[in-house]
Amino acid sequence: NAGVMQNPRHLVRRRGQEARLRCSPMKGHSHVYWYRQLPEEGLKFMVYLQKENIIDESGMPKERFSAEFPKEGPSILRIQQVVRGDSAAYFCASSPGAGTGELFFGEGSRLTVL
Amino acid sequence: GQQLNQSPQSMFIQEGEDVSMNCTSSSIFNTWLWYKQDPGEGPVLLIALYKAGELTSNGRLTAQFGITRKDSFLNISASIPSDVGIYFCAGQPAGGTSYGKLTFGQGTILTVHP
Image (tube, rainbow over all chains, first blue to last red; front, side, top):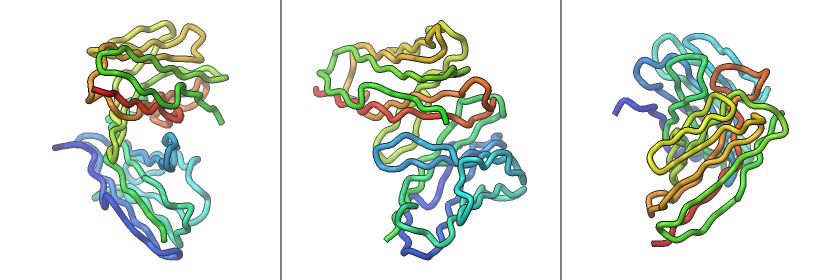
């Protein structure tokens, strides 16, 4: 299966710990997006990256959150000093080009903060 | 920011019935997309619409891009049990970005009784 791969699928952290979520885009896709979904809500855009570049991080909280998409390896969404409000499903999506809204989503990483 | 109002919030129907849901916005959109999300999974693209007035089908699914560019609807004909899930509308606002920074509706939860 050459779909978008995310890991871990489930992650439990205590308040103050760090969470690292990984995403490998579909083969041939160089555009990666991160979205957050709170319970019973739609998805909210967080950040758009291309290889080694953050293109748009307007949806990302200014503090504690960071994202990268290195030349080699998966994209990583990092949340430092997690709080209970960070509990959510985090979805990664990829696309083959920039000028499209047709995104291919991964199965998500569900973060629970105790 | 832009908001999409999706209705109904939930639907309970009998197998074989037709289903209709819609999405409206106070501002103009350049692209409308419909995604389906199964429990514990990521959204999967069903239909993408790019022109005002466009009517597109995908099997038993039909979606239209409203003439005013402020709304879209999705119809499912002859529903079957596997249609169960959450349906999301999403769009790229006019004057916004051309990449995959989508605004999502709140979702319509569909339950199909055999």
